[in-house]
Length: 435
Image (tube, rainbow, N blue to C red; front, side, top):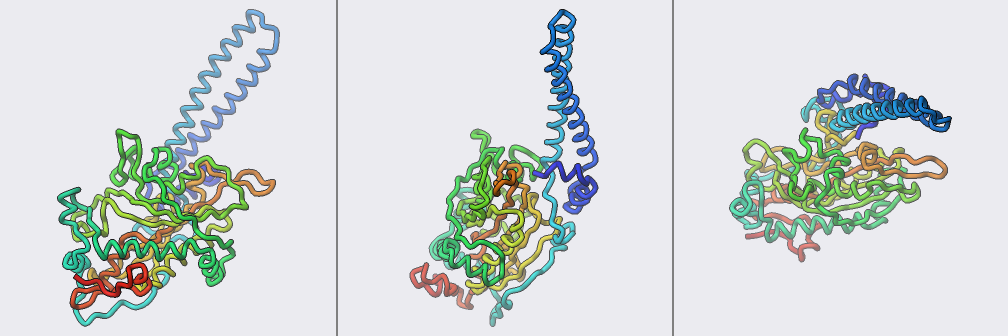
């Protein structure tokens, strides 16, 4: 949730920020409503003060009539104030976070900026195949049966592909839950951060509307409850999580934290649900864009002065894990028109898919600053200082998408696939996936 104080301080700057994000909104109108709300509050408080004074005096018939009239006026002022407050709240709810100053400005993905590249594109002595052409022959991904059972954009992950998925998770978890490994990255990248392991969490995958709203997702598609991306269970009044970031952040709802306990670092694993409504095409065949998938996600709660470095740490973790696999990828800094509603800054890792002859997003990491903590009413105390809002960040560890990259980058001409060396110990020593 955006801070109304930002609008009070500089409505023009907020207007410019929303425009850079492609949002057509009249910030001046919101500022005007807020001004009227504050004026109504002042008038209400003055009337209540008058009532307190009058009620302590002699209650003759004239005074009683005056108190009755004052009571009616207070009721009217309260109704006016409540209505204006609701207008301001409803007007702020759909607004996105303010991008950080160094976030590239642009309307869509074409304005994203390449930050770095790891490795070289693999060279093949044959024409590399699309991953589903490999997976179907190997019998490890079955979307045809899934379509009969559940419809399009579902898949059965089987055999070696299922082993790959859990090998990726075990590989990542063995490192993220090791405080020494995190400390080594903090040292390697010269980050002024406290070293600590990530706490492994398996969260609930259903959320109340107020939790999804606080995390900045419920209004994203303009309809609440329910929209064209998030699954809404009407009978139960619950959302299905689209990422474990949502329940991990909501876990801190209404909590007062101690600065000495920060940063809080979590790694969550959950099944995720997204409608992924889009144009028909090759992505409907396979598991790149599906309605149900599994994902491991990092989530951090930290002091504001450390959030930029925490963001760099999350990206460093993503890169270290990908480099361990030996996959070729590039890091992109997303522009204002391409970052999520709650994000102030986002990096994506796009991994090369030779069978598709293009890079595809496999990871994302975002700094949401205090956008989520404000709506979650999450605070922290530091010494004698009053409660402050922490910053919240999130980042992909592994979803099922790296399986696609492994199948395409490590494919052999005979249709077999090499298993990344770092994963073999988690797959019973399997080196090559065969039919």
